[in-house]
Length: 301
Image (cartoon, rainbow, N blue to C red):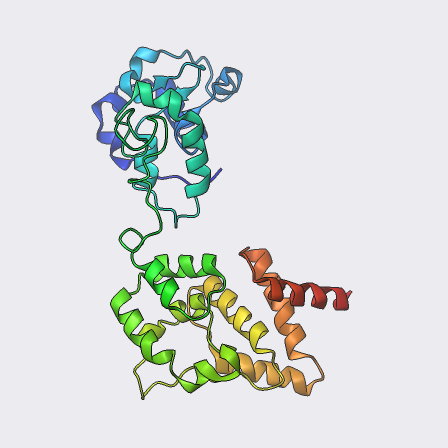
């Protein structure tokens, strides 16, 4: 079960404070065990296992719980309280969207104004039973804080999921990003070897590269020839995402150089670290890096 927000003001709510202890526990149980859109399939034997001598009295919960035609319970305010206005850039969007599509026919007739998540019947947003696409927003420039424009402008389109996470974390100023990219894309380092040394977009964001100053801050230096630049870039991206801070490239290179002198392969060390970072913080990896990692694992066996 994922973590959820809780309403701390409930202890000042007359309705809640007047409930018996068992009914308070049931309300907590319901909020913790409903699905992502606020629907709970009753399991009274389990409820009574946790809450001794509990008897459900629907009149105590009035509009806070709605009984659906199939017998499930629906909490109308749950979705808007937990997620606000959903965006397609939000990783949880897909699963919530599927559930809304599944239950919209049951929910809409009962609550035609359900928050802002489901389109009321006959309002021109579809057949009356679908998701309100104007509220659960597309990834467009006016609804994703500028990420789409950044993604279109960035010359190396890899690891988009990691880039979205970094963008949401740092919320960079779009205008400044585009201005900086306009000259970075013309820099010698970004144009040699068919762009091999362009950082991944997530690395660029986590390192706050939009703050680079033209002419005074050089692009990140290329790694030495004994390091595969693609593996090195992938490691930096994962390490930065795991820690939330830009990596200290020079420190990494010094350690790798020391291992090289001892007879160890820097690329295999990086590949092992990538594998461990993937295990700790799974992300979608570029196919070419996955192949390298799998090859390294096979060789180590």
